[in-house]
Amino acid sequence: MLDGVNVALGVTGSIAAVKTVELAHELRRRGAEVRAVMTNSAQGIIHPWSVEFATDTEVVTEITGKVEHVELCGRDEWADVLLVAPATANTVGKIAHAVDDTPVTTCATTAIGAGIPVVVAPAMHEPMYDHPGVLEAIEKLEGWGVDFVDPRIEEEKAKIATEDAIALAVARATGESPLAGKEVVVTSGATAESVDPVRLLTNRSSGKMGRAVARAAHVLGADVTLVHATVGPHPLTGGAGVSDVPYADLVSVESAGEMLEATLDACEGADALVSVAAISDYTVEASDEKIRSGQEELTLSLSPTPKLIDTVREAYPDLRIVGFKTETSGEDEQMVEAARKTLDRAGLAFVVANDASVMGSDETRALLVHQQAYSEYRGPKDDLGLEVAQALAATLP
Image (tube, rainbow, N blue to C red):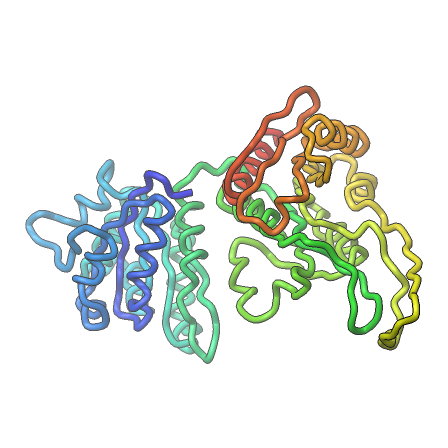
């Protein structure tokens, strides 16, 4: 999502500067060119040679007669975006008041004046982040169009956001925004039905495809709600999982019933729904106690669950809906036929059809099925997510 993007990376004197090397590598892995600018304080934490190695370009450590700030961030100059990561409280306050006493703040003043996108990833102790002056500076900069990547609040520290969250913010700031102002709901993951307090009925979905669609919709400017079901069967909200969704408001569910209820709530006022989740077609009346193991045969009585897209369509007749259809035939004609039945039944914008064999994989093959035609996609799920989000944008007014 960053192919061909030139990123001027401003590094300031937070201890989080030690993460700069990995951040630069991540931006470059995603296609960006990176040139770094460092304050004196940052150089006391990480050596410019390390950053030069990570970016493969000489680091700007002072503003000279070459007017490096203009060459990088002036009008029609090199940078497509200025990323300040990490940004200290001191730097945030200086940028908000056009105080240009470091190479980074001088680049920031130049970029804002030139209309170049600026993305800031703060990192500091939590009490500093909560200081009224810092919050006022952030609000002021946001009013000027500066984008902030929210820090992770842990151990009384406002820790710098993940490399993924920062890279997504850069992509959103520099790319086209056909979904700007739109609210998009995405369902994702595998639902699970309780058999007893220990056992579940679930499926092989990893949730990767749904998260890829949500990420892409965010990058294209949408406000995204991700209704995410149990995966593997452990929920996304456990441990570090929360940091995996900086691109969406996360609603965690487990069962098909919870998924339906949460999606109906999320779709109120939304512009579109992309239903990617692998939702249980059947549920079972759960036992209050663990079913004892043994050699006796056990019969479970399964009851059908409501179809999510049909229920949402009934509740929101004008909502734009994209469906996903998984088949096991392996035959394109059968996948297209099944997709078109769903498309016609629920009045969908289009349907993404794929074979069950791609569940859990990072790569996929899918058919984007419209009313009169279909196209084939092969490649990473992240790229398919972008194609789906772009196709959705084309259907919205």
